[in-house]
Every structure is written in structure tokens, then in C-alpha cells.
Image 1 (cartoon, helix red, strand yellow):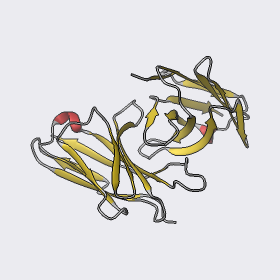
Image 2 (image 1 turned 135 degrees about the vertical axis):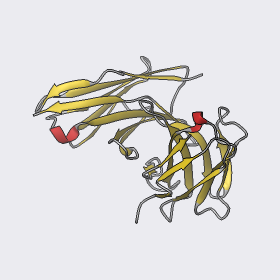
Image 3 (image 1 turned 90 degrees about the horizontal axis):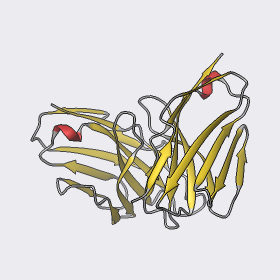
Length: 115
Length: 112
């Protein structure tokens, strides 16, 4: 169990550029979540995968955001045409639907700065 | 839409005392309520989960209560230590764990 990993850890981009983040969950975990967190706030839910199926997506998420989990293992989150308001920490979490499935394990996050 | 409130002001207590943090929610009936710890620059770490039909849960120095009538959870850390200083988040979830709603967290400072 190496924990949840996220890459890159930091990303600086210019407004209008596209960015992609990767999340590698704990290997046996079938649930995967993406969150966004800004300073002084709690994590804000973005989307949820069970295996490769995207089962939940926040209504607050604009069409510029898309996420995939093609083989039910790693996941990517892409933001197109970034805006300064997208600057935040993007967190990934995974859990298992069996056993103590309610425990989410978070990665270290990807900090995005849009100039 | 659901609203989760945690005290936005930092809680400052002396080492050895009991810290009590509050989580209030409206417009939602969670099946589960969780508490997490978050240190600066890091992802949250799961601490405890309590189910809607449970009143209290304990784990070592931690205790969580859940009152679905008041729509409130209390999180207690007994015999607090400076190492307990962090931000504590509550999170609500439904039966299928498809989505979690987090509060904004309360920063706890334990002074030696």
C-alpha cells in the first residue's frame, strides 16, 4: 500500500491554457473522487468514479472540466481554457466498496496557479 | 442545497484540556458523518465515521457524537497535545458514498 499519489504536485499555467492532472489510487480501491479546495475552505466535491464508470458529477462543474478513469485504475482531470478562478488545490481520494469502504484516503493534491 | 457549518474561528486551548469542535448541517439527512484532520499543504486524513443510527463513537482520545434531530455532530479530543494542532473537517455522505459534502473546517491550536 503506497497510498494515493498525484502528479504533478504543482502546476503554474497561463490563463487559457489546458492542464491535466493524474491520480493513482490505492491499487485495490474501486472508488475514486476528485475535489477542489481553496484557502480556508473545505474540499468541494467535483466527481466520483466507481471502477471506470463516472457515477456522479457536481452541478457546479463547468463544461471546461472533464475527468476519466479509463481502466478503473488511475484517473485524469483536465481543465480546458483555464481561468484565474480555477486556481486551487485539486485533491484525489480513493476508497473500497468492500470492508471499511467508508474510509477515504486522500492524495497530497496538485496545487494549480493560473496567471 | 445542503449547508454545513463549522466554527470558522480558531479554537485555542491549553495542553491537557478537552477540545470540542462542532459541525452543524441543514437541508440534508446524511447516512454517515465523518471527521478528518488536515495539516497545512496536505490532504485530509480520515479519523472517525459515525452512522445515522449511532449516538456516539470513540477511538482512543477521540469521541464523536451525532444528533440527527439537532442536525449536529460534536468532535472531542481529550487530553489534547500540541501535536493535535491542525484543521478538523466534518463531511457528510449518503448511503451510496457517491458524494461527500465537507464543512470549511475549524483550526485547533493546542498550546503547551
